[in-house]
Amino acid sequence: MRVLQVALAGMVLLMMGSGGAVGGQMTQTPIAQNPSVPRGADHGAGLGDIPNSPHLEEQQARARNNERQQKLVADTNKLLALATDLKTQVDKTDKGIMSVDVIKKADEIEKLAHSVKERMKG
Image 1 (tube, rainbow, N blue to C red):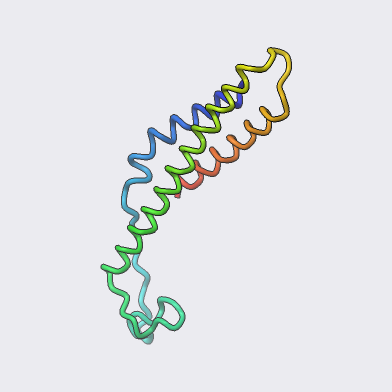
Image 2 (cartoon, rainbow, N blue to C red):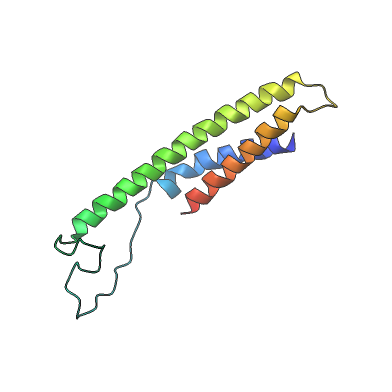
């Protein structure tokens, strides 16, 4: 029962926190340029002839952030489904006996919630 409470509390926190922590833009610190290295040559093997524009970097950062946000939404939806299923299973069990499936599902919820939490941190 404790695991269910932790999972549900985690989901609530994830849903509340997804607006600010995930939706904000990522900032990047500029890389110090070595004067002896031509501009753009320090960004990737074989890409020295492609200029590294700030606009391109911003687009890539936005794309990574959008992909991260989509993964978080998918994982929180999965968490909700797992927690709902766990509650249904717990409601059906006897008060003194927990099935192995219920314990496995609670472990799965705990791992997924931890993974989502770590990804939200950055």
